[in-house]
Image 1 (cartoon, protein in one colour):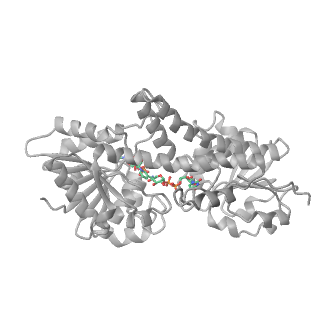
Image 2 (cartoon, rainbow, N blue to C red):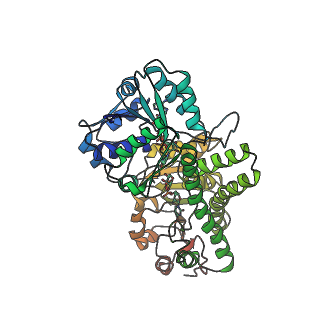
Image 3 (cartoon, protein in one colour):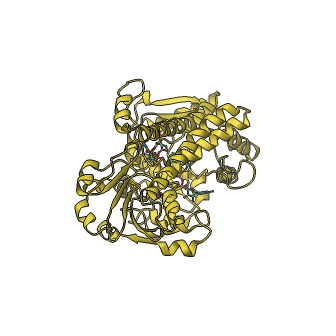
Length: 470
Ligand code: NAD
Ligand code: UDX
């Protein structure tokens, strides 16, 4: 068998960048070349200011970059030199044509396949790491086969990524499992052995699962759908709790104690966000529809519908509690990222709730420890977010100090679960706010009894407090 010496990765985003950094770190005997079409992204990977924030990533990149880890825009060269090529490009929801709003857009994956076919001059193992619909490996195989030159051969593997943002390095170093999907042929099996050999540098054999490409690709969509479904399940229960006076945290704790259910991913919130859950749910819905399985499609569609309901419900509750109008009122928003420990705002519930409040005419003062000012502005004033960008822009103020952000506001709205929000001096904040002052905790992270005692009219998900008369 050929021993892999050179690996290349097309796509230097969250997945390509962090997974290959860890690969280089754990496999000093392998030369790892990460390439991208974006010049800005590559420039940042080669600088002190990496394009993504992940705890622990800086250290790994510092140790390996220039030794066996390289970032460049020279895709042709990287592909030519590599024995194994990972594809980690984006596969967003289609915004046009057939399957618009649901199907995964495979145009970037296809461009990669054609590029590989064009420049390859020897045998290559092509590893599909992007999340793709179930036929994608077959499509890639077909494109490669139709363009193969003499002396060149290809094997296509599926190797979906399960890292979560904010904990990417930890997840990559110590994954619950790694999936390697391949063709049931001798060529397929030896390619799977090569990739297994790479992962075996740091991952125990029993955590490396080999399976068919179909099963592998479907497992990735199913895993994200199951995780999203748990969040929507507890969020649906949170609405019932608010209506009847139960406490969703107590319910979640008690439900999670059943070892068959387990305690993780039962935290009720303002809704799930991130680049994966909605996209992959919709992709699964589209696949089910295409396979003429409408009941299955409706089931997973509803998991996503509940998430939209949860966000909207919270936004409406804010306006309703503030005497049915937020027009011209200043509100402080804590957190804009879709979860803590990341600067990523893709599909963040904060975007949606801020847009809802801006639509009502509120002025919002936003503070997030990691998200850049320009990112927040783009997210809230893009054509996707509003038809009146100039009016909306005037209503948004971005702060780097949360204590400044709350001055003269009617309410604090917590939309991301950053740890630092737990230890703020809310008494000090209250003293500079308009009265009555409100606090809406969309992430259930602060001590509600304590802020109620201070005098905040407090609202959270899945629990009703009696109105504060202080
Ligand atoms: P991303 O947008 O952060 O990165 C994708 C990169 O690919 C971009 O830098 C883009 O410039 C580059 N690219 C696009 N077309 C290219 C081409 N033809 N040649 C070279 N580079 C090209 O995306 P991501 O978050 O890293 O996700 C990548 C894939 O991994 C997606 O399919 C996603 O569903 C999946 N995934 C993401 C996560 C996550 O947490 N972000 C986790 C698991 C799986
Ligand atoms: C997810 C999957 O976890 C990961 O395996 C996959 O590879 C990519 O998609 P990610 O989106 O980065 O990862 O973060 P995750 O921790 O799954 O959180 C997703 C969203 O759900 C966040 O907005 C988070 O705040 C929310 N969430 C999560 C809850 O509201 N409650 C929970 O109990 C857990």
